[in-house]
Length: 198
Image 1 (spheres, rainbow, N blue to C red):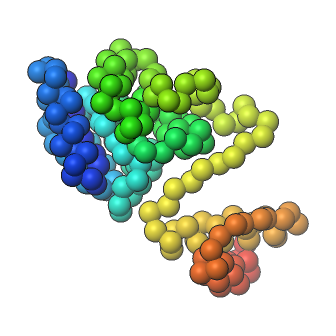
Image 2: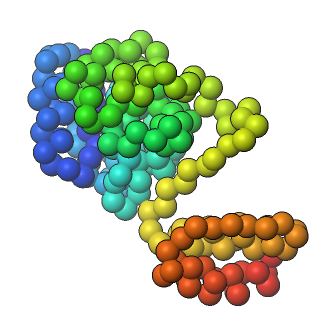
């Protein structure tokens, strides 16, 4: 019996996920979660064999949830199910230790093969993302790289950016940030306090 934890804040997708998994009686959905914090708690408590995890979750995004889950339930395999098709997002998702990434648009035909592959210890990425290289998840090997970060709320985003920018400015480097006017005002306010403490 393979125990599965479904994590998505969209009830319709949870229903679809359950119906796809019913094709295999040896796969049992033992629980569901609708936000990242709940997913981490249930993964730690239940130690499922497989976690199907969305990225865009409330309270704690799927990327950060996966990082925490890898520490609390390292034997649980993770497959991301997401609408995102950005190469950077897929790369960050797989760098958490997840072996699978299935776009929701491809899930009806690719979820079962993805689960089979991941349970064999093989990486699976949706066919709509094929042709891109995802096997090396080490960002240190890239000469030029872009980093994708997900934040659960605006306060955490502004605190993190303010610390990063303050360190850069103090060391004489430049920092360029593209943000909304509201975030800019909050960032400037934070920098005025953070910059002095670096």
